[in-house]
Amino acid sequence: MDYLKNWKKLISSWSPLLTRTVESVSHSIGLSRQILLSSHPSAVLKNWARITRKAMKKELLFELIIYFLCVALAGFLWHKPIILTVCYAVITIITLIKWHTKSDLFFYFVAFVLGPLGESIGIYFGAWQYSKPFYLIPIWLPLLWGIAALFIKNISENLLRRRDVR
Image (cartoon, rainbow, N blue to C red; front, side, top):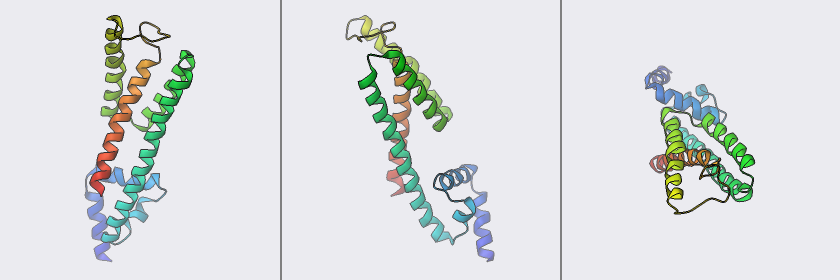
């Protein structure tokens, strides 16, 4: 029993990142931190790998839903820019609630500004044009650039993490 107490003490003394990750993963699949850490160390490691894979699958599913939703909305609502803008604003709020680290915010806002800026330059010089522009670009385009940056960042991190867990 003393061994188990020492194990719990060792786990809780690890970096705050590990503790936060354990709580986040255990919360996302409905387990308490105490249940997750109350097992024998080898069982904890096996459970950790299983739980991590399950959480990664949920994350990947969320990311793919966001992707297909954005593509479908653009395909069906391109001729109604105000409605499309509202839809992308809602998706932006949802994604920023889920992904809101400093790097997530940085990726979002850099893409929000630089993506449409680059497209505006291309449009100005005649490379292409949009059918219903606000000022060279559709009003919803900066939101889509930001969402796309978050999607690419998080799906790549998730897939790389998934490869490392195996």
